[in-house]
Image (tube, helix red, strand yellow):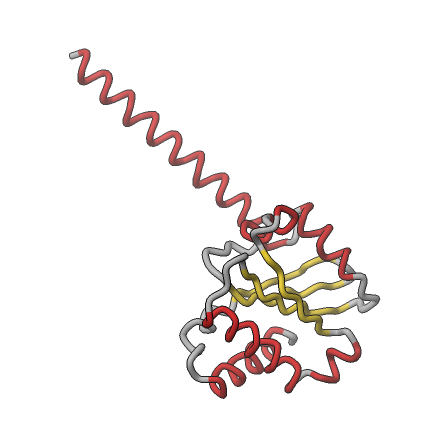
Length: 161
């Protein structure tokens, strides 16, 4: 009887803690999706652009960078520079490479739900983030430069509308 009560209490604690974790994850996801993160807001303000509408193309990396990681960064920057040169000059698109292993950048892992190195598009209006999108296909297309460039072009074009 005591053993059954103990097991029941353990299971009950597990269920309660699981529900709390789900609620916390949902709140964090909502905050990152709507740009409510204080750290993200500070990072956005540090961009210093005078544009009322802006897209930031982030490449998130760590301290250790493999060949594939370096390719993804180079392909992303190359594609943006090739297809969006005028927007880069006008600063309506900004490229940023960010090391998420630095303490001041750790918030991006939560803000953008990063589980690996990633390319993320962030849309800002009047200094506040209104939307973001993680580009899921960059790892898959890493071996095909032309397909990667076309993917980046298509995603940014669609995201900027």
